[in-house]
Image (cartoon, rainbow, N blue to C red; front, top):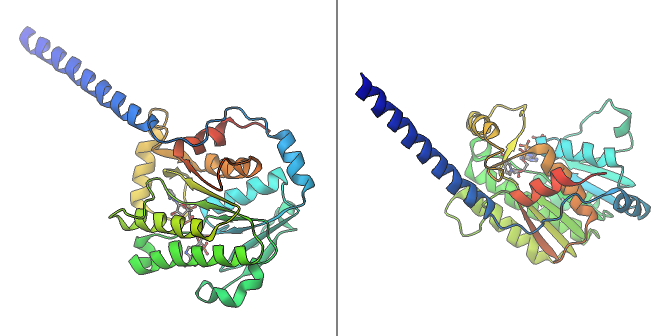
Length: 275
Ligand SMILES: NC(=O)c1ccc[n+]([C@@H]2O[C@H](COP(=O)([O-])OP(=O)(O)OC[C@H]3O[C@@H](n4cnc5c(N)ncnc54)[C@H](OP(=O)(O)O)[C@@H]3O)[C@@H](O)[C@H]2O)c1
């Protein structure tokens, strides 16, 4: 019996050591994510005031989705733009008075050229558009996440928009053998080639959000990752941090025309800025 207890004790000890070792490696890898933005505790108040005085206008693509909806709320709460336009495939109704000044443009994404006017006259564009292969099939996914997004960016630029903020994905890489990452990387590259004065790419990991739509795989990943998100902060991210980072980053001056905010940078900006 004593022998069994000794063996069990040793086994538990070894197991703990192995877990700690693996956790340490993962944490190291997690933190070795390239970070292009490291500013901490930026006070946004005066930046916001300056920005408001410029009377800029913006549009949001995908404002009916999880990120887009919250991005819209963040933009309205911070009251940064004199005009906010939603461009989407359907009109949405809002009860809150804060939403009454919104402009909504309903477009057919298959015939975007016919809706060029919807993209005219905006200073800033935000894109949270996207679907999944499970929902739209491989071709449909490419159509939405690449073709619709790129065409929208082209029309926006032709209409005078100087900066474009794209919600992409962690691991986006046009050479990837995974369709999702490849498409995300390709659309990033194609939009970069358009030459916006500013192109900001956000690459969040798994979004932590209580999604209205059922996505079992994503639900499972969220459950696992949210319980250990403190340990591996770059494998997941609360959706609020993403939208807050997108808005706060708009107020900051980028070092380069194209900037990439990896998950950790989004986390830092989305949780450490104060207003
Ligand atoms: N989920 C994640 O964990 C994760 C992680 C990293 C990056 N991302 C990326 O982040 C972006 C936003 O993700 P999300 O989860 O917030 O998106 P979401 O909730 O699925 O919303 C997607 C938006 O795109 C629109 N859309 C989808 N298919 C469309 C179509 N065929 N025609 C026109 N509009 C269409 C939707 O409009 P309707 O409301 O009309 O359907 C909605 O506004 C996506 O590009 C996604 O790939 C997601």
